[in-house]
Length: 132
Length: 132
Length: 132
Image (cartoon, rainbow over all chains, first blue to last red; front, top):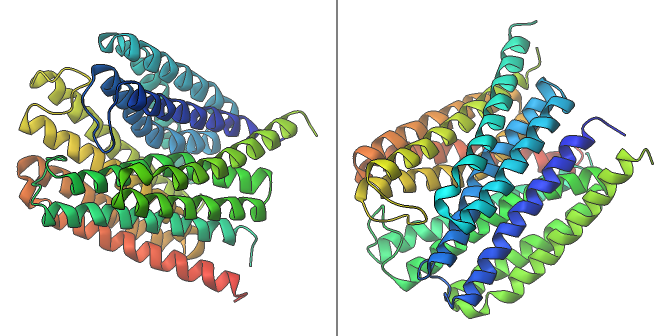
């Protein structure tokens, strides 16, 4: 066992969420008859598509922050914050599909966890550069 | 030489594919007179744009899976599966541009390779956490 | 201190830029009354959205190239090229918001830096595989 197994596990969970949001778009494409390459035409398809894209863009910001936090702060802190992020993003996806106006809480929770990872990683990088 | 040179080479190939799909969008933007920031207006532009976005979202899911599989399963297995994924994604891009209805085969091939990497990585992480 | 602190710092800067472009989209959504899940409806919202998506897709191509260049070429070279890329992308974002026709210079600067990182990383990988 290595402490880095834990952020690796979080990463796999995040990739599985990304796959799930892509799968929902594919299902909505069939269900609502949105033929590729269109990405508009039915409210429910557009919700699924926005959930996927927003999850994607946040995943791109999340994964490097997770691993930098794991390296510079510690695997445990990164795993806890990463788990909170993942929970917030699952909450966001479910809430958005039900009602786009309800997407705020999970979204905000995930961003708080991300912000803490970023602050921790920046602190660690700057301290390391300063030779401490 | 390090065994990890091989997944590094696959990674460079995937980045080159991402660049190629972005380049096709830029070319279609000029060719069909789609002025930024619009992303609709001509079927062929929209195909190129969807190919780029779908390649992008799959790359985000692919690269971490590739490297986790390389670490937890082995560089050789990850490289073979990563090569299959890359071939499937090139096939997808070419087929989609010709006819969006033909995009399924390459897409599915890449997802199978991705799924095997995910299963291998998850197995490796869980075994490591279990102390095996 | 580790030489890899520098590409880590560049990575944090790139993540901060990604956050800033997402924040501009959220602000434009409120300011121009674009209700989710729509992504069209006002020129200024669409500019912010395109800046975000273009930054995102380029970040996905950039971060692996940065770290492969840091590993195979050296942390200093990767950091300099990564800093140029980041400056080019900030320039692109500001110019695009002011006038989409002016987006070319920063975009091109960033792509040149990216191309050099890719060439350096490919050279390093191939030399390593060749046993040099």
